[in-house]
Amino acid sequence: MCRFLAYTGTPVFLDHLLIRPKTSLISQSLSAREAKTVVNGDGCGVGWYGECEEPGLYRGILPAWSDANLASLCRQIRSRLFLAHVRSATSGEVATANCHPFAVGRHLFMHNGQVGSYDRLRRRVDALIPDDLYPLRKGTSDSEAIFLAAMGLGLDDDPVSAVCATLQAITLATEGEDAPLRFAAVHTDGETLYAYRWASDGRPPSLYWRHAGEGMLIASEPCDENAGTWSLVPSGTVLTVAPGRSPRISALTIDAPEPARSLVA
Image (cartoon, rainbow, N blue to C red; front, side, top):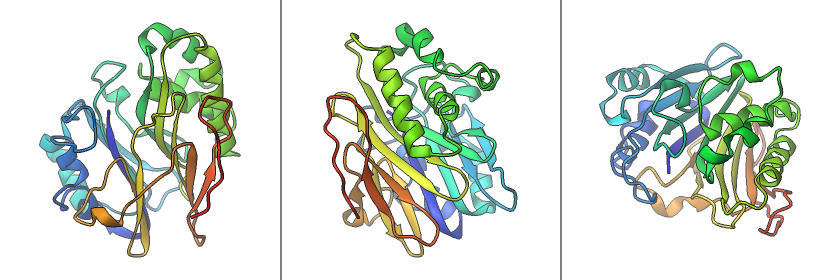
């Protein structure tokens, strides 16, 4: 499984969160603590928002721990909102096009999890991507397919409904297969941050959040010495962080074995 981190809040230099902490995301690329795969060395990436509406994006196939360009960028870039990811490939070869985050216009998306047996089911899942968006399909991963399918189902207008509809559509497309869909993901439109945790078999990947000064951190696993201050995003929910509002946790409405419930943080 991959590892990722997202931040929104007062602008910070990326290295303060991605490199300097003892258990930072970069260190997790070599030694993750809460992942089935300890080493996440199949590429890395970071997407950030600055003065422009559309985000900047850096992705590469080097392991994060040895990517000098990534480290240099993190020391120079100061951002109010960014997503960072280190990859352990479950589908799709090691290639820049398969590294996260993925970007379309003002949107960024990254994912930890898998569509079970994706190599065998890929044509069914890819068929959910509308024709007008399919030219944006540059890689071969299930994560990019999920993102583009969600874009086609209204991610630009109603992100949570679009993601729910996408997960439901994939569940139906792979019905009858002994292949669970496991989904921990972060999406942002450059303003609001959405963090999802769900699985068709009730066993989603880990996903945590905590306040960080005047900002908010979301991560696959605690990435600093304050592990006791992190909260687990409940299974079957989405955490929404919008400017000027308190974080909100609500149920995902998906027709799947895992029961839905409503929670407020």
